Image 1 (cartoon, one colour):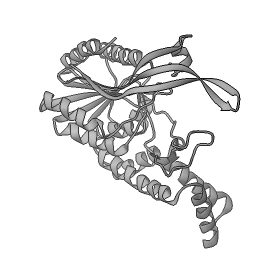
Image 2: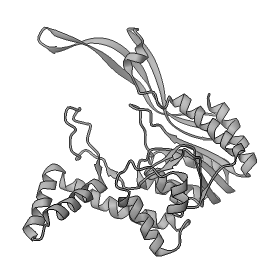
Image 3: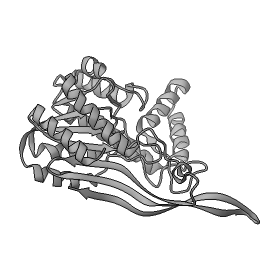
Length: 334
């Protein structure tokens, strides 16, 4: 399946819903994961310029998360072109994707669709190194993991004295750079502010808003916690809509199309790609933004895999697979 197939499905959706459809997918194929990123704002602007001002935009969203500020900006950008924004979740809209859903007028979720906590992770060159990984790879620092450590220390050790509290902070700053800890605190404050401003389209009672934000930011217990349709609607009070059988068929076919093209569920394996050959060209689609009017923007990684022998010790050679990346960026198809 390709863009022409999805374009036909988006056209069907627009006819059935009397709306304008957009599709945004960040890939979660193991080894080729992508995230919501600020660079997509320009591409969304191109699609929206081609669409113009419309009454309703229906955004199909599949993502495991990414930049919270990019998510906030995307919602506000789309709102410059429409009176009403509905987000359709075929399978996953986690973390920053859930934040985007909070900013929609309604969320359409399938039975298998899930939202998730919006507690962010901080990523940067000052983050802790990952043992055994290349130096440029750094471990993400979860905002709530830091808060959990401090809460655990308070609960188990008491921390009744100033010296005890300072000791916990020293231990923490020995493991995590102080600037990263500062970024964690800023991110925690920011995510609640963004969530509060967006969720007002679903909830107006201040106590209820605080309860939902507490749950999404910390009380869910884990960033991997999944929120299905019934909980999102009945427990959190979000404006959740269930698709009719006719609409579900379109959502299902759209999901199958991009999942097949991006090979969701198939971990990246250089050996499997080579299949016994000495070398092979590859092209992986890792993210996409699509609409009927604006065509298809795809984020693609391309290159060549080749078998090599590398020296791991004097006189000792070891087989390896070299990855010569020739292109990585966005391509547009009309």
